[in-house]
Image 1 (spheres, rainbow, N blue to C red):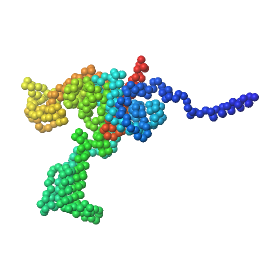
Image 2 (cartoon, rainbow, N blue to C red):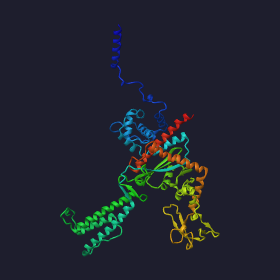
Image 3 (cartoon, helix red, strand yellow):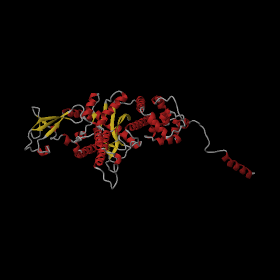
Image 4 (spheres, rainbow, N blue to C red):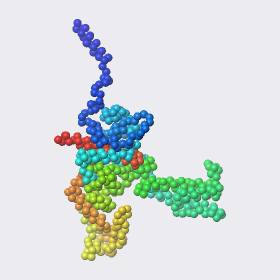
Length: 535
């Protein structure tokens, strides 16, 4: 009896495999039921619904062709969540996550777009609307978290472009080669004039030429000499006629001149270089890597303005220097929010006369360091040096007096190069430096000492020193190093966005704005998660 019971029990256990499978369907049927109530995708979806993302999409076409498209609002949510989730989301990563990640499956409602569909949506649907989306997200965060936009912490960082680092073009070298080509063209035209001397014809020579002018000369020369290009000889063993040699050389010079002009036009008036594989990227000096290499690479100058740990404004510049980036960044801020920040705080790379005057004209306080700020505040030997012009004594007549007791008289004024406000520098010359016991310490030439003085800039530097050395200035400088530089640290090392992926200035701006939106949503979510813990 016991044996029969054991036999029946074993048969029942063995038969269960025919009625049960670990891959069978289970309840619940809705993906939202699998997610925790505090899951970030649910909070993200709620934020997107409150903002109303459908208003920032292009209107749907009246007529549809082919298969039905994906839900455009879901596509937008999925892309923004991808940048919020990992810092930067590639198109193939988005495609893969929509197939295996439950959070992305929830946002896409079980639809699985390909990477091509995501790429088309970003380039076509979001292009021109991404700044509006950034403004809407920032306005929502500003209301919910009470973001202070009066204090703006500014910093810039150079991001390597998606370009070949060995295919550079230098503007100065191109201009030098162009002038060398002008000399070769003049020499060739002189030879042509010698051959045409018996005809009484002469080609006018000049110091500079245009491709159109050379083409006209080429056509006239071909007509005068009755040149037939189909009868030209080529290859080894053939001797070219003199007319063919001149014609081909002149045509070669015309092509080369057109190439030089195109390169100079690509650089423009404000750039000195570009990459052949990415025309919008400028070669910049990058910071040393872990091997101690100081490299010159094609890059973009990324400028951000941070307020309460959120990226309030972001822009992509082609300038190597941060000084030229301050005004465009502030204009971008004004375009987004309708006002200028009261306290723009930046490092010494932004301090210049133009930027100080700009702040003064638009009601902004001067909290930007100037290039010699560290030596002025930390190096007492430099600050109190007796041979600095700013430390010279003034006599009863108002004239400067050098440490040797000689008067320094006004010589001339000179306009400052690159200044937009007509600033001029005053140059003063010592009356007599011969026999001065301090001559070896005071000057480096045999001539009398010449000093450059700008009273306006000196007074601005004094005002900036007072602002930065105050208690409020010390707090602002500390916050700038934490927030602005810390934001770049989070972007590069915590969220792994260290170089630009897309090509072209327009698409790079699109990419950086998406990264900034993801960063702001990531910060907002973390702050909201910390509030219950603090309570």
